[in-house]
Length: 354
Image (cartoon, rainbow, N blue to C red):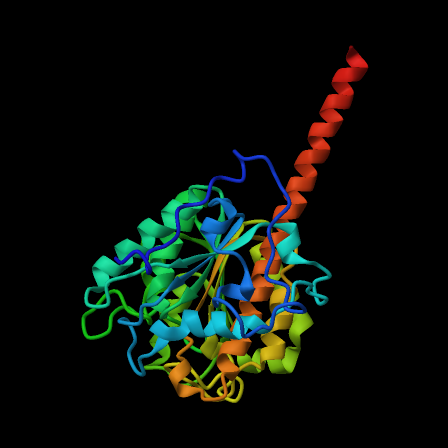
């Protein structure tokens, strides 16, 4: 792993450092968006905030697990480049995420492109190092194989988690060509390893042909509920979001977004496109509806920029990561405010006794 490619030094735990004013992105009203390094949303690198962060944006340029078109190894940097257009205030969530929490770009995890087993271990070890500090992960893939090691790390910290999986495909198949670790198998492996809370598993946006009805039967046996793209169209975003929130409850939640959940009209730059998908508006609105859920980390995968000359896919992906980051920042700020309020009331009670 070269120095340039390896993740930045692990951040210090927010629980062991004094809370300070977060360092935000470069001001695009003063410095043109096309100037400077392409960190996510023009945020500081991890080493520029003394390794202290609440949400670490990390790339995993790995696509050895794909079954059709390669190229997602370039997804993370394409998303970063598109994210130059993001601004610091999110009106849809009425929040300035980069002022509520320290968000920083943690660089890339350099996973071995010639050995999937080793790559999975490398991603898990790097994710463990970041999560052990108390930070949350916003991971930019890469193909969907990386969801398995990320879920291992998250479950190691939180126990079995609720999973909200946005995808055209189930990704609960058993093997491809006898290989257990591919972009079509991560959630079968996660189920087998006990990483998931089987009472709170949902696919959203699935569609297209399957190998057979048994694909659905086996998926249901694992505990997954399915909201197809047609369901979203017929029932509407608000009803679907309410259903998802009821299923998630207050459990620790992991969100995994395959950009091919979007229709190819909105995201042509992906490895296995399927007709009839969500619009980018529908995806963003469902994510915004998760406000208040206990989102512990998330990933965004399968952006393959070579198939999209207009960069529509990367733009949609950057906004998706922005909404997920905002959800986490709002929750972190709310927890900090509650802790500060509790400490203040404790001091007042102590003074009253004295």
